[in-house]
Image (cartoon, rainbow over all chains, first blue to last red; front, side, top):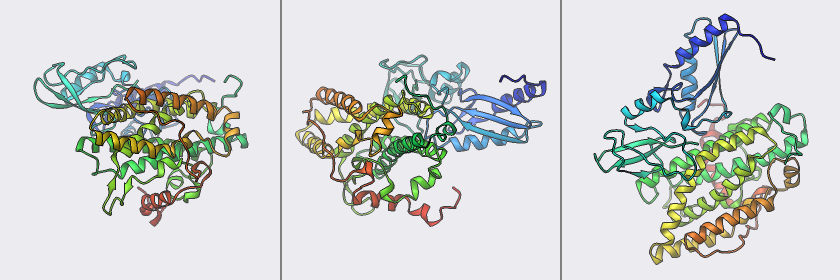
Length: 167
Length: 277
């Protein structure tokens, strides 16, 4: 079943991954979908790029926009004539998939990154992305996007958002 | 559950007509429950007790609408029709949601002097949410792999919904006598319908025989045990076995409330089903 990839395929797939670094999460323009851990697989066959994407939330309204952005970006790649984007749930996206570098970028964007290796029953402690204080409170589990909650820093008195732990 | 053959894809399911029918029957229950309750949730927009609640409730309704879409897409893959049409073009008799989720939010209408019942919204969402959790956990062992993967994902979102409603329930249960009284009245109202949730419909035997989900008694027992425990922790009296409405949504027999909901939610889509969105 396993087919050897040709050099051309290897090269085209590497190009796709590079291009995908430029496709941002529409609701968090600070980081790319690759950094969000949302790109599962890229396979190029006969000029068609097949991309498997892991949704962060099933009903995320940004999914269709992401699909369009991925398609528009990848056709820029040499030899890519067509792009097929498929949303898959195996493996499932968890917030541990967010890359380490992306966590700092989230903070600088004013969004606290989710805790790593979070388990059911753990207390969700969030430090303020502006002043690093742990003296914060959750104002609303739900926020302006499905993946985010609204918090308030009682130290620097700034409202901020945090990505929910998804595990 | 080892005796069941695992069906990995829709193509594989389609080779067995009886299996496909059982999967379709179950999927309509899952899809329609989430879809209709999400619609009722969306009718609270702008009317919730405060702005943070408006954000939370609409966010949860959006999540649930997304869960319904996933199930409608699974139905589409099993040849039941186009996902959008399944949601927007079926008549009330084709819906398989439980009666509980179709009830209006209270007196009046969204556009005409709404006097909605917030306590009813809390209790209905919470009791349904607790059943949904038990059902999703049972689906993790389903013989149909797409359902296993979808349920695993939905569970990661659903836990936040439950947390939210639990906070409301606990706070109102331990608040003023008026709050407590309203909550108890809402529980009584929800209890008239809630028993139907664990009904797997006229094709239940086949659904269970193919290992799509655990049987009704198992689901019901687990759901009621969890609910009883949580009611007790909130200091609420246990209302006993829940009843069911004289209609039976799982068999396609609905109240006029569902027809009203469908007429409103599909009004624009029906003008031009071919329009692209």
